[in-house]
Image (cartoon, rainbow, N blue to C red; front, side):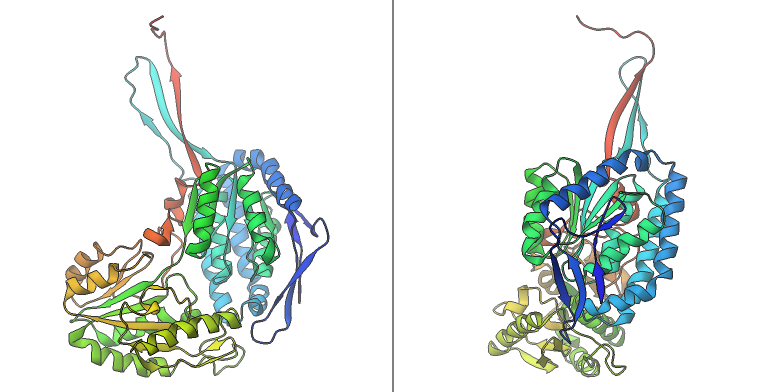
Length: 482
């Protein structure tokens, strides 16, 4: 079991009032983590520590910031086994956490490389003798709010580029993966970033609204980034706007995978199965809608149904389990209700559908239409639905018939044809002949519509986590009208 203290100003400490909460394994019910439940005063202290550390971190030579972030990446990899042990918090397979560590260490290395890539520019001035510059400078304290579903990747993403840009960070951990997020903070502390450069706050679930509001309202917090549901993202966005704080929001998705009539069906099936069911479909980019040309739909569904039937879900510690647990029993109940609604309205169950506690078998439905909740609502589980259309324009209309717009994919042997469609799909990300689930540290990652705004990832993050300033030097006399 993990004891999870707060990390404030480089020190591990309990909550101010000594309260704790427990995180239990969704499969066994065993306590995995006993976690400090931060008070509002703890939230204030974390921001104060980050603010105190900001001048020295911002003034650090970029090559030194780079060296410390590289060291953090190495330490993260070295402690991969500790992260994998924490997988019990979410019921995920240990190898999912291992993959998380691999990509997250890459994100730290990419952020380290960006410390010397934060450019300004010289701008020609109409004023005689005026030398004008646009400079990018660190903002101050950045608040990162990370989710549980890819806890190492998304916890690191919440702070890597803010740190590279010279900011200090308060990371508000997920109530469902607090040990993992606290371990990220410890790795960065042990890498020698400096006391207060990274602070980690954990809170009891019932305290989350008050803690988040207090953190965002703090005048020292200058930027906010949040990854999570669209529902909570709207709240975070409203709070940030109320306090005039720029925010990056990466929210929910309902990713479409379009299968054109000339697609390689075997390749599309493999990508669809991976995109829909990896990590039990609990990924913002998960393939939820399979939008298939009617000419090839029967053949595609037949091939995919066979593949889905082979993806056994069970205890992630069982070598026979390809898929693990959902985040909790209530998730299974919620997703099953969406499936039952679709079946009651005429959808056909092609594979899966069984739910036992927090274990749900990979599920495929055909014949889904807009009368069913699954047509529009994000399942965030191991469920994919087939929607049929005739011709590319029909498939495009179906793909865009969603409030979400994070990731998408198109399968076609004619890449030029697919590229023309990709440019019209309303999403922040689109992959041709690849799955909807794909992330690389150097790529711009963000959505449109109800999937949020702003982009994480390398150079794309610089504008979000720096302040653009206009600075001039007047050389020689200047004429004034009065």
